[in-house]
Every structure is written in structure tokens, then in C-alpha cells.
Image 1 (cartoon, rainbow, N blue to C red):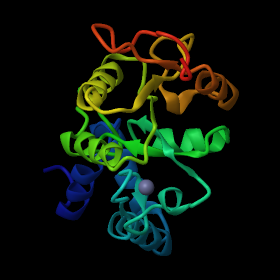
Image 2: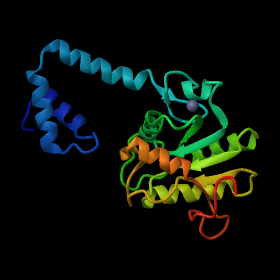
Image 3: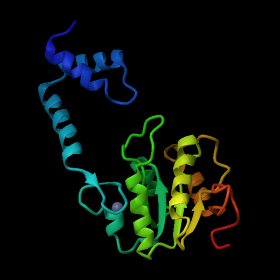
Image 4: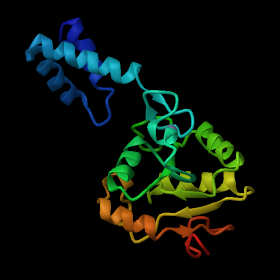
Length: 213
Ligand SMILES: [Zn+2]
């Protein structure tokens, strides 16, 4: 152990953040030692509050301050339209694009998915329950056009296959591998307006006509 124990402990904790290696963790930890005590206290409080005061919306799984998030609680939103995304960042992106008035369903258990992350089985079961309740008429798949996103989309299609609900997918033509969270708002709006129905057999993610068709 090269550093005093409290510092070493901080470094180990920081290393657990995504994208933070040993060297970065050391730099961040030493930065903390140089920072005013009030700032550090504020950081500690922010970490604690973000974790303790937030929860997952019981309906959509998005991060929320109450058991129902503001979107699910909003009577003005179209509860018949459910956009399936991987995490809260995608919800945020869709919301800032301002082109969507439906609701969401967040798949991943972790809010910062890592390589190889799998959608939570419970999230897909909850989605199925939402559809079974009868109010949902269209599920829009907006998972990333990469291996994990496609895999998640297929699991959703499979889980809803026997239910009377339209399943659509954001229009292709998005740059390959682009995650929703990185898309420009206008491109996203275009992808949403151009969404296509998913085929029912074999190629669940291939286009097979518009949402009305
Ligand atoms: Zn919600």
C-alpha cells in the first residue's frame, strides 16, 4: 500500500467508475485532497443523495424521485405508445428532441450499461404486463443498433409475440453502431417518424412496412 489507508480506499472506490483506470483514480483522489473541504463535503452529499433519493419508476423503470416518474404520471402523455430504450440517457435524449409524447420502458438493470450487459429479465416481464393490461397499442424499439441493442430488441419481440400489440422499430439509416444517446435531436426525430413495423417471423428487426401498415 503506497498511500495512507483513507486515500487508498478512495482510489479503490473511484476505480469502480466506468472508464476510470488506476491512474485516473489516483489523480482524482489527489485532486480531492487539494480541494476545499466544503466542496468535498458537497460532493459526498451529492453522491449519497443521488443514490439514496432516487429509485426506479415502478412502471417504466426510469430513474425517478417517486414510485411513478413524471412521464408515467402525466395524463397528457400517450400511454398507448411505449418506447423501449436501454437506459435513462436515452430517455433524456428522446425528451430533449421533443418529438415524442408517449411513454417509455427502460430495459437495463444498470443505468450505465457496460459491454456485454444484458437487459434485465424483470424489465421485459414488466413490459409484457403493461401490454397485457390492454392500454398499450404500439411498442417502439429504440435500442442501439449494435449487438447488445439488437439482442435486447429481439428479446422484447419474443416476449410480446403472442400479444395483440404493434411492434415498430426506429427507422434505419442511422449511422451503424450509433447509440441513441449520441444522436442529434433532428436525426432522432426523423428516425422516430420513419419507424417501421417489425416482421413477425425470422427477421424481427427488419422493416416490413409502416406502423400503420
Ligand atoms: Zn415511469
